Image 1 (cartoon, one colour):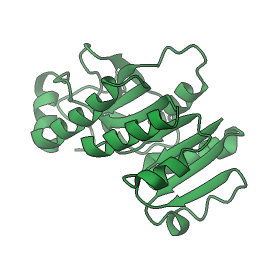
Image 2 (image 1 turned 60 degrees about the vertical axis):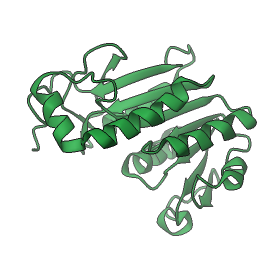
Image 3 (image 1 turned 90 degrees about the vertical axis):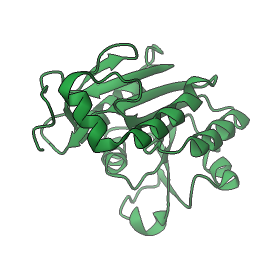
Image 4 (image 1 turned 45 degrees about the vertical axis):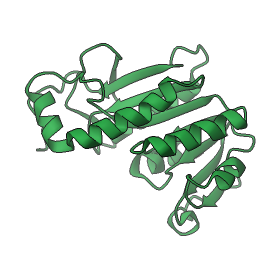
Length: 213
């Protein structure tokens, strides 16, 4: 499989890249600003670095050449999602996994939902919702990951998911758990993740806010 990672210098992306290099034989195309300096430590003949911005349509089309799936690490602007969607359709690429935030469907209830709105801000939540809608209204095989608050824990890769229309569960999840979910989605052969929006947290970590606040 050939995978394009957009926003590949992000923390989740870096963890994902390392695991894919260690555990699979997938080819990786890593697109980021200043990729040649920021990602130079990923030495492998399976890695291609693309230095630039994914709003550059020509550059993005070149990066998508021969790609089977895309992971998008940032979804804050609907215009960027429209460029990615249009470039995917023009290049006959169907599969995308996108990381967004919790609360875009008003699915986070109770005190934690109120806390999350105050911390994130309604404008940012709406911007993320608009970006996700670009994919939900397309013909692409998308999986949107609505991530709760993140922490680092090398020793745990656990996660729990909820579906669109269900109340969100979990105030926190490890970045390593998110990476495990992305790998599970990439490995899936059944199509059960296609055209889904998943809330991602740890169901046993509930409360009015994450434990690290």
